[in-house]
Amino acid sequence: MTDDRMKTSDLDESLMNIKAFAFDVDGVMTDGGILADLSGELYRTFDSKDGFGLRMASMHGYRLGIITGGRSESIRRRFATCGVKAEDVYLGSRDKMEDFRDFCSRHGLAPDEVMFCGDDLPDIPVMVECGCGACPSDAVPEVQEIADHVSHCPGGRGFVRSVIEMVMKLQGKWALDVGQYKRNF
Image (cartoon, rainbow, N blue to C red; front, top):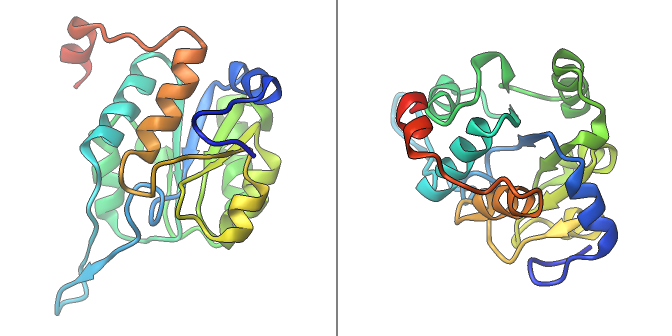
């Protein structure tokens, strides 16, 4: 396990192989808070910098996946604006390992080519199987213990951007092409 300031050579080697990112939503993309109205509609708050990180990864050819227990169609809509294809958003996931394997299979990825980001117990099997398991600073202790990387950022507050940027900078890909950004988004 490392934090953002101390990367081991083993972690760096793992990060050099990353070709895709997959994420849980609540507690990773959000701070875990969910608002519900009287009709039962659920609302989440997402960090715009995390969204930009997803767009940067998408523009540079990384595959992006969302594997969440959440069931709201608003999740799929949110991530469509960030370059995540609808078929790569797994809603209502009760077996994240099954969905992770499907994501890898559909894109011809080996599990060690994917960074998975989670924060709670259902995420542990995927975090152990993937190339690099990362979690926000406020993940549950069991997840922090098995994570390859524990960020200094909490969920929903720049965590996603920090891990994408870390991988892309290490791979020499963190650069914005404004023309491409304008065409894609």
